[in-house]
Length: 304
Image 1 (cartoon, rainbow, N blue to C red):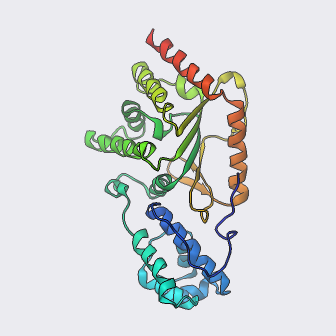
Image 2: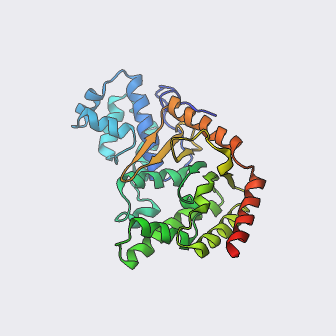
Image 3: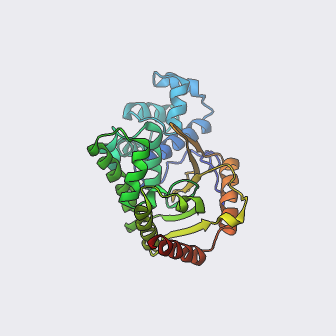
């Protein structure tokens, strides 16, 4: 199930083909990957490229990874240096610069989003598949509003009511992607402990379970439960998510959230290892049907 990295997909000087719809985060990554291919094809160092745009080699590295915004003048200068001088060849990439600099829908929540999580929201928006393993909370894309509020209050207990409302609104806005025509496949595996922990109280948890039962009715949502009686299992290291994209130029990305930061992995050997772990988890966990029965039984248990 592994895919090649952007470097593996070829170092030819052909212009990137992009169908659109990925959002600014992915557009920056695609544009950066193309600039890197063009530079490598011409045997130009990052230092030399940086000198051409009056910048350091470190900035070239950040540009090629899609971690910063692009200036159209800088891209135009780099294209000239890399030998892309034909107007028809340059036009798609310069158009991509403008698209990549456009704010995403989550821009209005920028005051709430740390930089490391804003990147994830952009990647999630563009992903065609999201696979996630959770050990403590219901995945954000599957949380009910009441459960989401309870989780947010655990971390932001001192926030004003209006800020909490906006944080809940942001989480609900992310979920809208699941019912759009271009909805991604969401495949979640949750440890049983997630469903035994009464975040917000028993009634909130019961409603959350009902929310999960509704969610799995969607054709693009799959859910499996890892029961306690399975003992040790493949993902002993903790929760993680894997995002896959429709653009073949983009590698899979593994996301692991920490307390005040996050780790993003996109090297083939790393992502392939996590994909193998995820596949083993799915084999060890309850099947989809067994997981649904577990949720139904647990909801009944919480009704007593």
